[in-house]
Length: 494
Image (tube, rainbow, N blue to C red; front, side, top):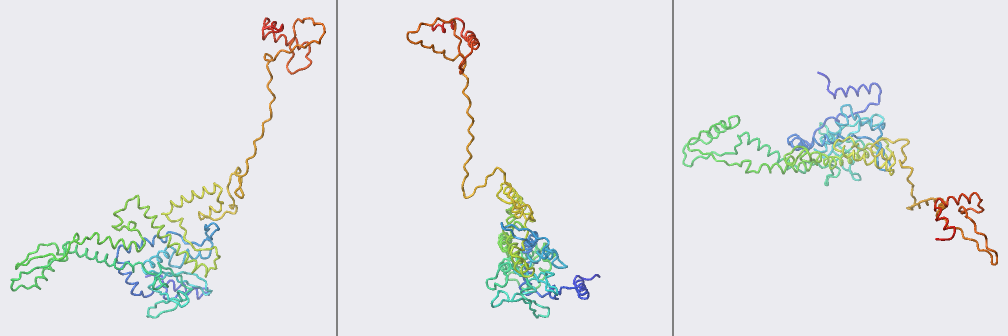
């Protein structure tokens, strides 16, 4: 038979010490411990015995590991750029030799949902560097309050009943929610619905017993009052032997006037369906899981294929996003800052872009970022940060059209005046519309001039017309007006 993983781990540590390496020292209690009665009871009667509790916690553990835990750098506009080479990211990929980060997150959520608390123990090397993370539950560790601090240190329960003190700096403490009476601890959601869990378990047991009795409620054998010499113990024993267990459903023969009377209620009289709905709904509510999502009857009654996706989105946005936010802040404050010397802008956060239920929201976000960049009111690197992409060295620019004029101090620039078109010369007047030249008035006492045969019209806009031009103009005049009309006009007659 091969070695167990604990033996292999011890051999690996021994080899590291012998070879002089800075090996991590894992205490013996890190992988074992005695569960306290409360945690053991919650696991036994809740997680292991109740189907609704198991379905809700299992759904929470699956969803919690879907988002990837990473170290990021926050930008001025609220975005986050991942830091893949950060040393803590290297640790998160393989928190310990036996677990991946998905296993670690799943177990952390399971511990929180059952006991209200979950812990990561920091395994340190000889140089006091965190080299491994080991998940613990309320079964193995208990916080101890302090006078000035909420938690002073932690107690680890050992197998011999003794306790061992663990410094507060070596623990990352996750809480489902704070217990008002003990704020240094978390409050388990199953504690609030413990009665509902017991009620649902009893209903399941009653249904099982009823079916084992051939679905017949409890009966009573009525013996007549005047019966003499009837051995009641014998009759009861024979009835149980012949009518219970695998012999149920057979034919009964009664003697001595014995009668059968039903003393129990059947399922209809008990309103069994309503009896199951109330505990199931309250358990789902305490564990922040929709009943429709885990297949409980109270949820399946209103379930359709169209609203199942909406239900999953509601669960992720209303429950898981809040747990991712709280866990990210806890890891930043208890692990990233004190043990890895993080800068003020470095945080541990869950990358929700890998969550299938939020994929539609991511598509909508990408469209919005694309419009913001092309619209010119978001820089290229700001858009990349919104989508979780690394910055581009040349991306601190706006993509704007060259025709857009920047405006300062809320003033609107006046539009430039349109250029005035040049003045055009007046159109030339046709010869037919030119007025006849006025005749010169002779001076008083001068002899009258002899009548001229025909006067040639001067060309418009020209002074000092030659004789050839006058003859040409006269011919054009005769052609346009006709010889008879031209002669009358020349004579001054109409």
